[in-house]
Image (cartoon, rainbow, N blue to C red):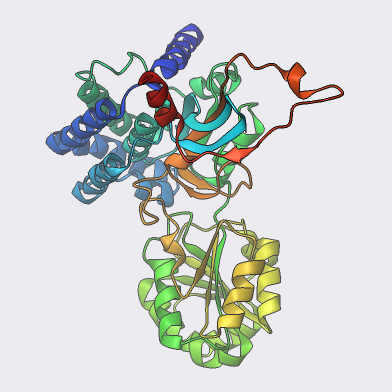
Length: 454
């Protein structure tokens, strides 16, 4: 089995060189085929997913799978429509490979170009969400990266059905190299993949914080992603309470089992007495369990209709629930809220609700998160909603890519010099020739066409 994994990885790594040079029209042809194949094979995909859901429900009963992961596992027509829409959005983008980022004349007859290029072979390791396969396959194909997928066993039937449908769809595009995309299926293969830093250029993990931390701790391959999604909404003393109700409710209830859902709500003391009972009623109706600091507990416990109001512990401020559970804390100031977020948050997504522009500006500047919202739900932190077509993941890193990462996170660049027999010796010594360092207003592709016309 180990040899089979290595063979697949080696094949995909070799294919990545050829895929990097596939022209844009050929890649777009393959993407159209992928979108069409998902649409035509809806019944097959949903049938395979039903097998995983049935098995997953038993695992939840046995305590071997969380209910939040089971929710992410579900594939229906709505989710299939989203998969197809994601591919079609990627299709609309210009070919990102070979774009000139900067162009500089070093000297007459000596020019330097910084040009976008694929990273190489991307390893995608994920739990539960079969929609990861078309999302990332589309982005990797468009950006010229080979991809090796490893999904969780709980989604084995769904992943295999979707992957096979997509792989079959692109076979009729002759320019695409064989073996550029591969699917691994057994748990033992994860550790083998993590050892293959000679061939795999980047790992993208998608799943629970424990899962992502395991990946980060057990490989030398660079990892793009986030371990925790501890997101906050701070309701300022100058908040419009109608906006605050909408933002806080959507951030928690719209879909609680995802990394950009709010886990802690911070409320300024001046408006807590008015705001908390109103939002508490809405949370109660939605079945949200509230874990409160002492001051918020006293306000909410008086409302006898609330079903679940508990006292928060220190651990609650550090917890990603991925469920209809919310911790609440009253703040004495904006500065205290910012300090709390930077201490307990995961640098993922945090929001402020306020009509005070200065307070919003301070929050935006001082909260150290990959996405910061003003009067908007944390749930907007998403590659599709950010206009990226789809996302490879959300990164809380501060290098290479941050926040919802689309195609730009799958690209790097190379430097290309066009010379005319130039040598460094001319630019060194007692009378060195000076560099001109003038910006050029044409691309590398344009320059090559100019030379070709001579």
